[in-house]
Image 1 (tube, rainbow, N blue to C red):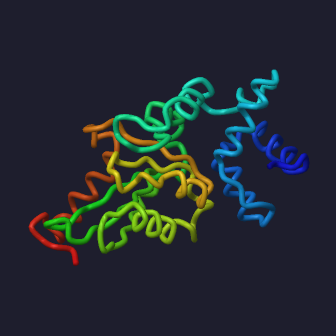
Image 2: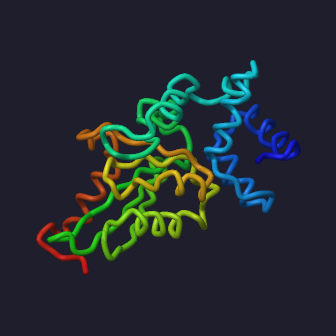
Image 3: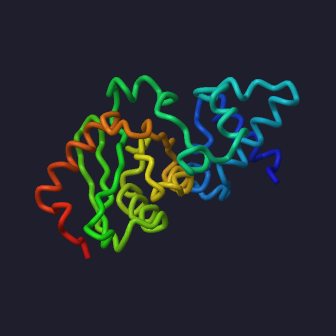
Length: 210
């Protein structure tokens, strides 16, 4: 349960247009409290039902509420998936550093994988080899790569693979927002897709990665 003190801190940051994921990440980073971002969404919803206006500070207030408090899953099978259509325009326009694209490269016969991350403005590429494409492996590798530079992680846009089902834990650990490209529209993560194509020159589809 949120104490009045924590509610006060959360409210101030919501009013400064922080996302619940960013707030939860910062509270944990500052050693104040380890709080799941869904708890903050529930707090916002309770405030709205009581006549409050905290929900107006959510970046996509109406769509976000439908996604958060409607069905927890969707046709992709990814819980609480937020579509790329809800991504801030400043991400689409490449106006800042800190917006990433993510995917995985899978080895032949599903033996081994590589999780890849590309920052949209600086063109920085990070890649990490995995024993397989289990969601837990991808979660651990993504946090391992981005945690040292998480002040430069504002959003991550993922492919719709099941290996990204733990995206909410990634968002909470890094204090960022997560989005998903439209299914079968890899061009929406064009930078990542192009870089993966280059990587495939060295790790072709006929190669096992472990």
